Image: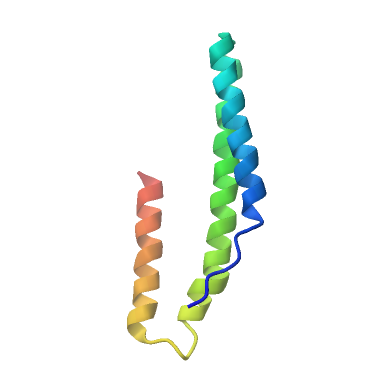
Length: 92
């Protein structure tokens, strides 16, 4: 099975890396805790947005593909279990 193109997410990842570098510099400079925490929340939000984008592509491409007539029931069940496992990890 071909995988969806995730190259557009590289820009998001670079931004997140830049934000993390900024947080490190804030800590090194001894900046105020709340200022640092505000930046960590921004990173968390950016990572969540990245995850959402990847999940949408996975559903639109991989899951839909697994449920096409050319795939077997075992492949479909495997895709369902992958998603359930992913969501169980996110809930914890």
